[in-house]
Image (cartoon, rainbow, N blue to C red; front, side):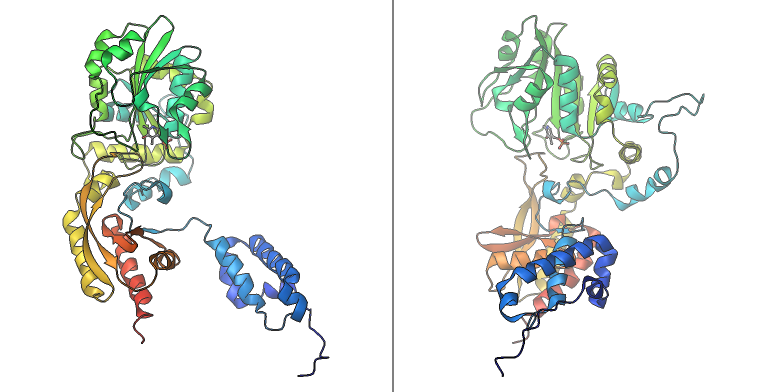
Length: 455
Ligand SMILES: *Cc1c(COP(=O)(O)O)cnc(C)c1O
């Protein structure tokens, strides 16, 4: 090869690259301007690379580089994934999936105009929450109910309106952080309320609360220990004892968190209606944990208190959209009518053990060389029922590759499969694989395993 041959530094033009047939699906899914940016960035990086400076475009596949960059962007887009982790309400995977039938049911009311803030009875301005107040009251057994964007907003709003400039008593065992940086002491400080800590990490008694009360106390706040449990010698006060001793000017609010409404999922946890029956003025919880609805913060309790919260100016920032309100409304109507599909995903999963076992068996039989049936556990997750484990089944993958590499490859499939690692093995917990995802999981695994068959 003559060493004098001139180096070719001419890269294809952006417009020419945009015509490549293999790029067209990315334009559809990412938008043309975003793909243009990918192309420009790729060319820019290429020009600065040492290989290019040395040998020009010789041996460089521009199309491949652009595709890799587009592929990376596409993976940033919201994508359906298959949850094989065994954590039902998985914070990183969108918490509660809504049932498709619920989603379809609210299509009409969202794709046209609706009566969000008009009273159809008289044509005057109406209340945004509409029927939800009645539905929530029945659901929680409270005088009234209201909805905000998420439960962090519930806690902030009730502190801001009811305890600003006053004292709020919280047990030392409940000064918790939930997920990404939601810390009870911080929220308290931001709302302008003053935290008064009582008890110890493992023991707080009714007297601890009652002895801390003075004329400047606005509230006793009990917070569910969402994502952890303290075992061994612990004591939490009987809520009745606390209520009995509370003076008139002190409210009792409970951040119940999960929205657990009955004892069927766990006998150890207190369902929200029991707090209200015991005399709590307010309970708040998330819409997308155990209830299995859209992301929302729900506050139920005494009508006079809910009324005050609704009139707080910050409510303008916390009010949910009609999409959320309509989903919640439909879910609660179905739930109160005891439709099985209106059970949250947690209850439906826990009730599904025979199917879970049969599916694990199916995997082990379909792919005997790669899958070993394994007894597992499932947890509700998402900061609900931290200490409760339910029976589950799954498979351990036996492939002879580093476990992390297998996990990465599964996440790279067209419909990513999210597995977990345990003792350096890849585990697929089938409890959390949705019915609609099951055939997709099988087909994808079949393709994935087939590459190891060829020797
Ligand atoms: C989950 C949880 C929150 C936060 O709720 P979001 O809906 O995520 O804002 C607050 N408190 C408790 C006790 C929780 O479990």
